[in-house]
Image 1 (cartoon, rainbow, N blue to C red):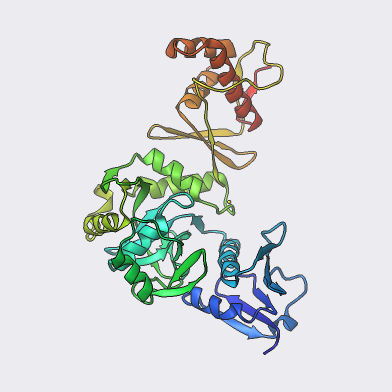
Image 2: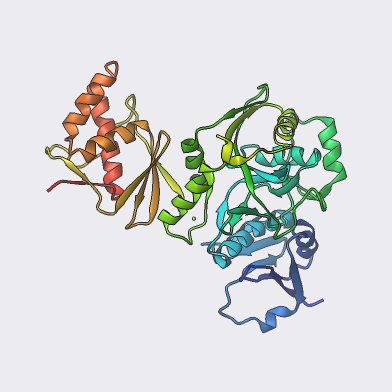
Length: 406
């Protein structure tokens, strides 16, 4: 077999090149079995030199990953760990090839014909919970990344095998370990992939409507409980999980707001993923009418009336403020989002920043803001409040959201 192998994946413009890495191909074929791809031994000869590509090359016992989205090579000793990183860059390739799609760092499991989407942070427990849902018969669309495509904004499966981090937490029981052993895919000392097969893993291109957003709140020893979550907080979480940057910020915010507005939103507090999976399966086995139910990455701008130190610079002079000419705002529930049209960025303001934003819009001076906060927080030293206000105003100015009045 020739040393170089060219792999083309469906709906990804950038090909994958394996340079002297034939042992990596069987791992790719198992981890990405549900994402259609074609391997061409020796196919590199027909590839134009300027073609952007994702490459894994072997140098002795080291596997080197390169791609258009890397500033420097990534080194791995274990070929499976190299494939883990390859998956990340394939997703980047999918996003680049399909600019109309949003792409959320979220897990998604199909229960009762609709998707439960878990927009959680890295290592937030979403993969382990998804695997427990699969053990109960749910179809996994994603355990880390879910594209959202089309006019209906349905979830779109990429066909990526779920990946669990090793070792499992102590709360995992023997029944789940048996399930994992029965569906074990490739593994390393860090990761265990699952080979779920049809019915439990959605193939590439499968779509389903989003039924609910569920924010996971894993707490040791916590009894599983599902409670409604404010849409504003959900939107903030979902915006932060979107890493597609191919659309204007205003369009991204509009689209995500529409999705969240018509989707039930919950927080799931739990300690045991098996119990949480049973709760979700029972709750969402059947769905009512969702209408009757109640990357640009978002940047958080926050202030604290109890801590912080003032920035350097000339803040002594008096004068009011004006909002940036290209700035628009959107309020969802109690959450305020700002869009800077010049930088095409979305920002979220916490409660304190929201209050100062309102005062700034009325032309209030810095001293007025400090005085008002001193009344609201009489137990905090005034000089500390002044420092927090200065820090926040500087942050808003640096992002082009506020400017001094002439």
